Length: 459
Image (cartoon, rainbow, N blue to C red):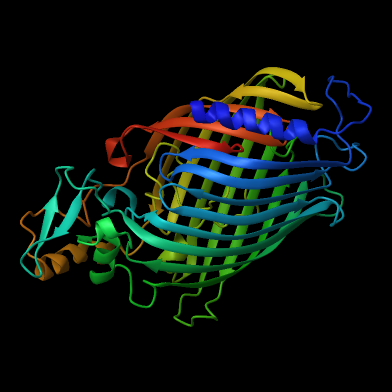
C-alpha cells in the first residue's frame, strides 16, 4: 500500500508541474474542458505479484484539439521504459489517432519485451498439474532426477526465458452512415525468442519447458521461438460514451486473423477467430456501473505453433501484455498464462463505483473502486495426446523416484475462477492509475492474494 501511495503522489506532482495556465472552461457537469496539449512525463512505479516491483519512466501526450470532443481526444502517444525486479523489462510505444481517418481511428503499437523468468504452466488448463514449490533437481547419479516438493529449494520448474518483439498497426472506420458500426483491418508482426531458464541459482534444475521439449509436446522447429505475421479483418460495434472510463454503452469486436508462415516456412499457417463483447450498464447514473467482458478465441484452420497460441489477437490493446488467460490482464489472481489452449473463453465482471470527484492542479479527478469476478477455461485442446504420452517418455529417460505425473493430471477441464477488488484514481476520464487485489478460488490456479499496481482498467 505504501508503494501505491508513493505512486499516486508522484503522479499528482508530475501533472501539477505540467498543468496548463489557461482560462478555465467548464461543461454542464462542472468539469474543466481540456483543450490543446496535455503533456505528462511520469515515473513508473508499480507492482505485480507475478513480476515483482516495477520502476522506470513514461510519457503520456494528449492533444484535445479545441475541446469540443472532451473527454475524447484527437490523439494520444505513450512511451514507456521500465523493468520489474523478477527480471522483466518493457520498451514500448503506442498511440491512438482519432483525427487521421475520417469517422475512424488509427492504432500503432511497437514494443520489445524481455522476460528472464517467464511463467509457463503447460497446456490445456487443469490437464497440466500445478504443484507449489515443485523442483526437479539433478542427482549425483548422471541421468537421475530428484522430484522435490518440500519447498526447501527455490523452484524454477514453471519458468523459462522469453524475448518478444511486437509491431501492430490497426485501424477502424465507420461503415457508411451506420452509427457506431465499423470495419477494422490490421497488420501484426511478432518475433519470439525462447530458451531454457538462464538464472544461475536454477542451473541444476530441470524445467517444465525442457520436459515439454524432450517429451515432444513442443516440437524442435518451434522450441526456440519464431516469427508470426498477421493480417486482421473484423467488424466492430462501439457505443461507449468514453474510451478509457466508460459508464454506459457496448463494445463488440469479431476479428479473423490469418497468419501465413512465409518467414520461417515450418508449415505453421493458421487462422484464428477472436471475439469480445463489453457491456457497460449504468446502475446509478455515472456513479455506479456494472461492466462485464465476454471473450473467446479459437484456431479455426491450420497448425499453430505454441508461442502464437499464447497471444490474444485483438485489434486494439489497453494493457501492455496480450497473453493467454491468467494474470493481470485476464484472470486476476490466477497463475499468469496458466490457461492455454487452441481455444479459450473468459469472463470478467466488475461493479465500478465512482466514489468521489474533485478538481486539482487544473485537472478533473475521480476515485473509484471495482469489486470483480473473473472466470475462464480451455475450450479447444492443444496436442493433448502428446501431453498424455510425454510422461512415459520422460520416465524412461530419467529415473524419477516418484510416480507423480508432472506433465499430465487426467483432470477434466473446468472454469478457473477468481475474485477481488480494485482501487482507481482517474484523471480527465483518460488516465487511470490502478491497484487491484485478487485471489484464485481453486488452489490449483495459485495460492494467496495477488496484487497488481499499474495503469488502466483491463477493459
